[in-house]
Image (tube, rainbow, N blue to C red; front, side, top):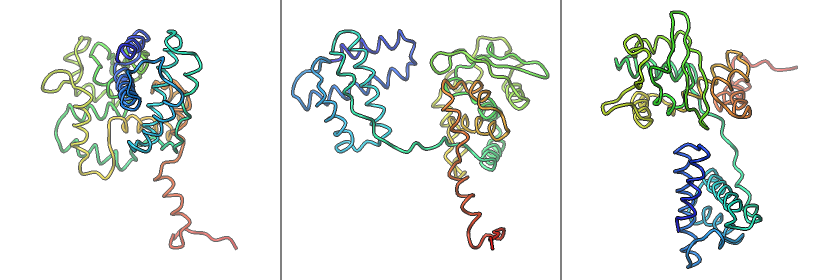
Length: 298
């Protein structure tokens, strides 16, 4: 059952897709294969997939499994990629890849970022915690926009700093792309506190936990611990979004924001110009009857 799935995973690996992407694709396809066997009572092979199977699987995900549109969309996208590869490998007819049902429509929520009060509350919690490492991590995320796996993969040899400027090299960003991110004074201070002068140039992870280099899960747990008393959903990715939003609010052009964040598509960057729910709440509050600054037209 898994031969074609593993061959597809090997294809993704050769195409330099990230390990996490490959894991997700493999899980999605194994779930489809298990459903296929259970539903049809026969072994799974790409050549046996029909448009009816694709339609019924989509319906099963929605009705029986109760998956949200975002999850349905991801699994359908996985199937489409798999079938395109299978067609190119002559395992299925070319037409079947075009029979994957249309994705479920869902209003895409805007990126979640922290406003200035939430950023301040998080930093104050970290300062009370008295951990230089933890404070350095959050300050670096807020001032560089690194993805959490980029932060965990950062080595001292990737950091260059002088008294007045600095830069970090992200060797393997999303899609395996390399980029350089200049360091402002807050980011430089964070790296100084983390041990730059002691370890400059070393092929050694910048941030360590109890069992070696810090992991994405370790960063997430650390942030959750400090954010427990703050009324906001705070994750490493929310800090990346906050970096982008702060740049946009400061008047930085979208092309520069995209380059700093490593966005492949400018549409991703444009989302930071969209108002958040808090922005919208503040807007409607301006026209309430009890609003003291309300000016009525006569």
